[in-house]
Amino acid sequence: VRGAPLRAAPHAFRMPAAGASAARVWYGRMVLPPGGALHPAHGQTFDDLRRAMIAGDAEELRLGCSSPHAVARQLETTACAAGSLYCWHRCMAWAEEGEPAGVSPETCAARGLELKCVNTRDQLYVAGHGDYFPSCTNTTANATDYPTLPDYPRDAAKCTSAMFQAFSNTTGYEHALDLNASKLMWTVADGALEGKLVFDGIFGYLSFGLAGPAGSDKNGMHNASVILALRGGVYDDAKGMDLTSASTVGEYKIHHKQTSFRHWKTPRQSDPLSVYAVESTGCFVALSFKTRAINGIALNLTGADELLWAGNAVDSYAGYHGPLSRKRFAIAWAEGRATVDGGSVSTSTGWTAPTTAAPMPTSGSERASGRALLVLCLLSALRLPMA
Image (tube, rainbow, N blue to C red):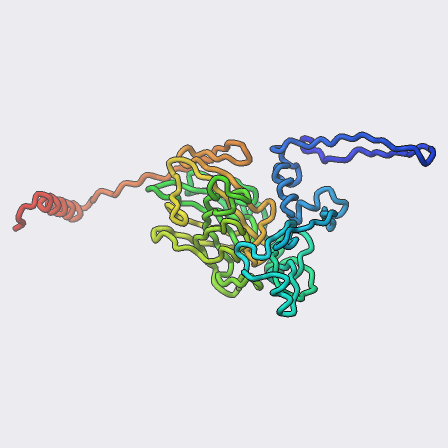
């Protein structure tokens, strides 16, 4: 409590000697912390942690276990209705939306295969987070973690917090907001949002954008419109990004039911006036943008927008972002205030753009040229004949 480590109180019970007919009666009470309270070690609210455990988050499932390698698991068996298969913590339809049609035990058997729950690498579901679906296969390989990026983990001696502070300097931007492992900075000018999202991690992917409409599932991920930077612009469902291909930045719309990247990997047409760029140092990455809209949805620069960001510094599959490498929040652009985890935050950096006026001509020839240009403009405006 108040920063002190939480420790379960020691307890024990010794059953008194009694006959076989004696019954043991006990009473206990569990007290849950407030949903909005922050976990001292994870930096997330207890509500967020509970939702992640229910969703099968591999990291959150380890909370309360005696070993970092142990996870909470579902002990009861689940009987799924006809036409579905138990897959990734739930009964999933054979013909799940977004997945190949015509998959069933019969169609699999006709091919000498079985209907199983697998990932894109044809590995069987065991536990934890991932991208799983019903498929015809004879694989017996259990799921493994994605292969890591070649430069993961980064060198902590070379990628220091002081270096990140320098890399995420907000000079040139009127507003900035700390968001877990990232910093968002921006200025609103000429009806456009000019900004940069800086991530304290190596480059796998980095995204920022508009949360899905009210009622969208997965904390606003479904139907979200985002700007996404990929370390390798060529993507294969089974192999991930081709890291020998050039990095790309584009606009994407997340699927209305499926969050795995393979379901929404085709970029949308960007506004021709939008400008995007990505910069990676090998320690940190920055996504720069200047835009008025994302996927044709205008930013509410005179009001407020519901936003989200996410990043991955571990693998090349544009997949899971980890509990600290993402956040949903809101920004009232005109007021310069943000709402993060239910609290209101001022975003002003104190920096203002310098006002510059065009220099007046000083030499005699410059003054004469200026007068001549003014006369021509006046004659043109009055439509008078010029000698």
